[in-house]
Length: 95
Image 1 (cartoon, rainbow, N blue to C red):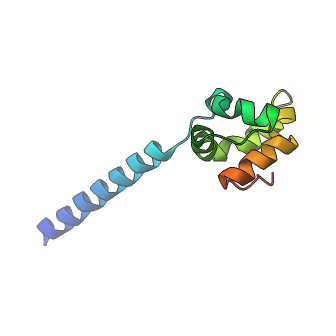
Image 2 (image 1 turned 180 degrees about the horizontal axis):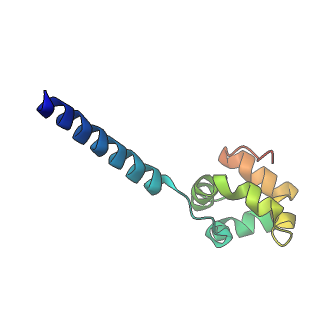
């Protein structure tokens, strides 16, 4: 009986450890310079590159924070930025 309780406790500990590690691996570091591949598309209205769309998807959890930054808001809130997000299939954030 003692063995099965210990086995269950160890199994639970391993599952929790693996779950916490996978959450850390999925965490995004918000860095607006990661969106540099999108700069020409946002400023000129040209179609976004695959690299731009990939970075935009990666930085999606950060977009509301960028919108709240007065230095970034004019770029993130521009019609071209909305067009890039739409083209890349990234929903424009509703913050």
